[in-house]
Image (cartoon, rainbow, N blue to C red; front, side):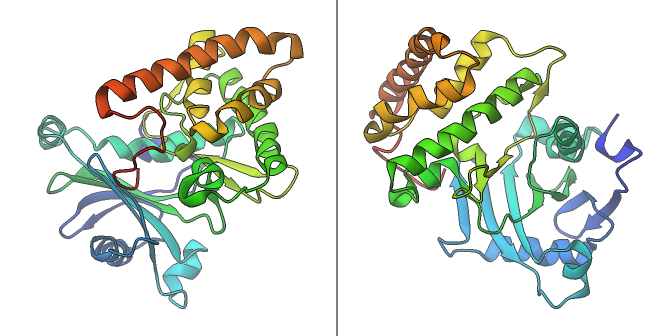
Length: 292
């Protein structure tokens, strides 16, 4: 079943000149999508350019908050994610296959059914044009990624107790993903967003959901270790501080932490060795080529 076929998703197909065919909420008109994409293409401001790397460009754009469209959507702030389509996928779409991002409405519903939040999907490409796929989601006002909170641009959580409080919330949240059989193969700090991080129970959101897999059983230990190693692949100054608190919050028993710690640290080291061979630097923050 595709995202557009689900009975609980009143979605519409809209054609946007210059951008192709979209699947969208009925509250979002083709004209509004076109306006948002034009703003996305024009964005050069670093504060609104959220990512630009490896064929992906993500921006924060706005509708006129006084427009009826913004009122119907209950938001005027939108994130636009643009992904370059490979020649192979462009050919597949020409032959009738759908854009990869079209499944994100269904992915979001499946996450919600498992108690996992993700930014609200507003529209996504169904048939791409000019080898560009788009996804539009509601902007989470006041939210930050785990990477932003911990270290990007100096980090937001300057106090150790604040970082440990974040780990205390992040550990059970990741455990819930794993126990629910949710496999996010790219569970890195920039793909987890946090709102109300000063609260004892901040709200956590999973990003980059297109290629999520939903397993029938809880995840294997190998997959759990891989995800935990991705999250704990942090700058050197945070390396010794975060691992044990995160694992203690993730696991049921303190006695299990030592065994898991050894496996997760091996996973982290493997990631750093691969980075050193490929890019010439070991820790994730030693060279930032662009927003990623």
